Length: 90
Image 1: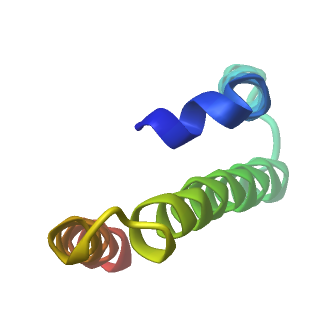
Image 2: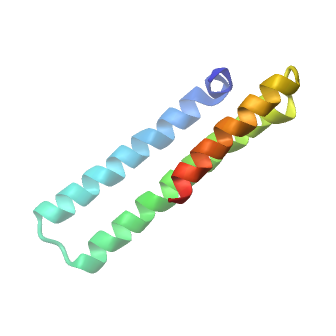
């Protein structure tokens, strides 16, 4: 995915924050924190992951669909997005 190279630092920073959030869940479980606290941490992770997914999807749409080199490349990019969305929605 060459288009991810343009925002590589930003995307990696988001992944690092997600790792930190997952570690916070692990610490909360180890400390036997209340379920409500753990659910709040998990909701935050889900939001952060959805944000990262949206960012990469948006970049993909612009790079490989909107600015596709030709119709074949555009069709392949759309099919790729369709497969990902089918998996994501499950």
